[in-house]
Length: 219
Image (cartoon, rainbow, N blue to C red; front, side, top):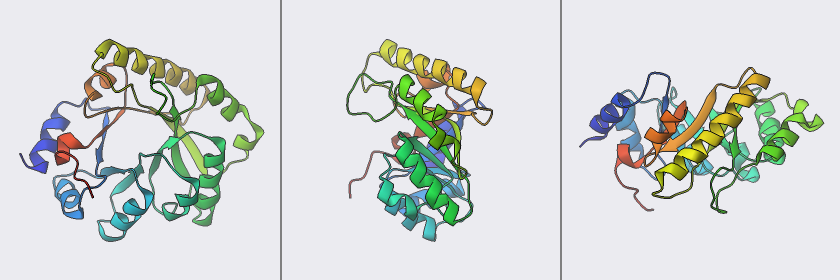
């Protein structure tokens, strides 16, 4: 199957209100170009410098999403062009994004990452930390970032009920946040293995890589 055919097949399974982020991390520019030629415009990367290199050479109407864990000292490399940052899990990171966005006179859209998995390895805020962040004076002073939604990753498990439960929990938090912040419209949850469950539980954005580009190629 070609990348174009894979894309077509996946898009056929997505409801109209769900946005597809094609996860292009570790993939060569040629593979991204192939997906682009098949109509895909939103790509997700998990290493900032790799994303910046791709941004330099690939078509300028691509929307680049940073979907990996963000190191504060690397924000400056993507502030000029990044469309959406999925994994914001602290006020310190948000402040850095705000500072770097200001240099380019931009407002950068961000998703706050919630910790919903039972694994300790996943990053993210709990509900208490989310509340503290959003009600802090420091947050209200940030003018160059906009919180547009939430992101979360379910536990890596074959237990579909557990995955369902974790996504449902995130949806509940998202619905409550939507009541408070009018810009909130994105719930990013679901990857190649669990995106169908995520959509059933209310996801509006899924991150799919291997089902489009084939298995991961290692550097």
